[in-house]
Length: 73
Image (cartoon, rainbow, N blue to C red; front, side, top):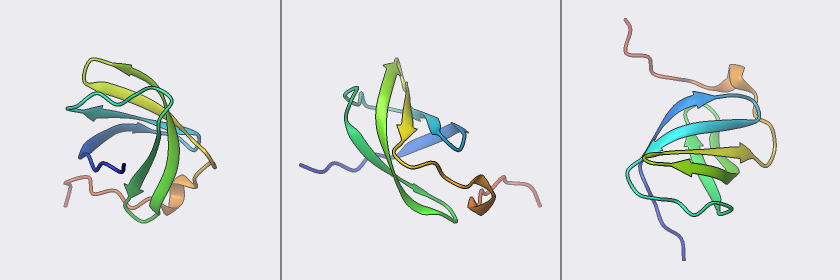
């Protein structure tokens, strides 16, 4: 069964991510992140501690395509 969660991505590399998540996510589960400028990216959750989790992308992403909103004018 597919579940949707809002997460806050705090760290991003071409190979993986770290995100804050209010609900626990099972280690080893496959997730899809909708990244601005890139779209859905598939990853596997590798660790989860408290309200944070980290995962490895199944295929490396290109960071220069990512369109982040920084809040700066």
